[in-house]
Amino acid sequence: MKGPLNAKEAFVSALERVGVDPIKLFNTLNLSASELPRQSTVGSSDFNSDSELQGSQLHALLQAAVKLSGDPGLAIRLGQKIDIADFGAFGFAVMSSVNMKAATKLHLRYVKIFAPAANKWSSVEHDNGMTVRLQQSSGTPAQQQLVTEMAFSNLISNGYFLSGSSIQGIKLQLNYSKPAHFKIYQKHIPVPTVFDQEYNQCFLPAEWLKLPVRTANPTSSVVFIQQCEEMLQDLNRIENTSSAIRRLLILSAGAMLNISQVADRLHVNERTLRRRLNAESTNFRVICDEVRNLLAQQYLSNTSLNVADIAHLLSYGETVNFRRAFVRWNAITPSQYRQQSTSVGN
Image 1: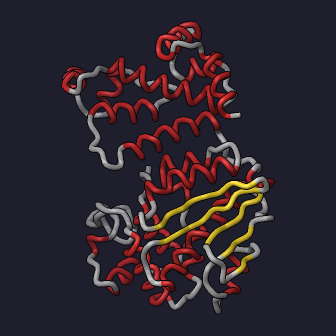
Image 2: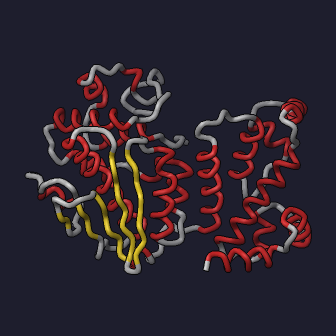
Image 3: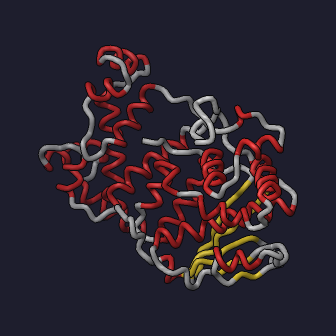
């Protein structure tokens, strides 16, 4: 199975889908083949994926790609070809969201894991909807226009894919003049678009935000969100044995792995695994309880699953044992925790 892609890999994959040869593109910028991601299909395992796209690199690559292809609307078509499912846990967290508002909020929270730091997304909620804004801190005006075209083409395309519905009510405001290739906007971004505005932003109406995501799966969403949260925490942290085990346990929610199975997945024997955990001043049971508690809290806060179903997902044979464990971890019952989290949410 293909692993999740990073921003550079997704960009190169999209280039291939629209018929642009990444090797020729990188050569035009005097970049070596080693700059290409390993998972690209344009070559073999010689390609390297050691770094993410930087803001300035993305701007330059997009401009060069348009020149190489001779297609002024290439950035828009690229946005359509970046598949959200390519991004592993991040993509699946968005795809399993209960509605479009939740999916949009997740996109804005986790895009920093994959997108260039020079591109900043933000949002403002209104009574009648939400405004999503993109700001850039690098690139020429022409390059920033290309990034904007790709970004909002992708946002709107993904919105249509996730909702399986029309994009009626969505409006786009752009801070540059109406381009000569506006017909490509009308074909691929068929929403009312106004140019020469102060910001690059998209308005999403409340009615659209309430639409259910057609691939919604609240139970799976909890697991994927936990993975994304760990990725955010680990951006500048070297993974140790404890965090590797947490990842495996989160992935196995619904059929929690035991220590023997975890050791096998990490390609060590059980004794070695216990020794490494001891060196990190912890043990398997502590980590397992930590993950179970995190998932339990997420299930209680974000799903309508009953306590018995949650106990089953966390591999408890008896619901009463799960209740006792939850009280030990949090000093309140699962029902009390759900009631408190609901009150806070309101």
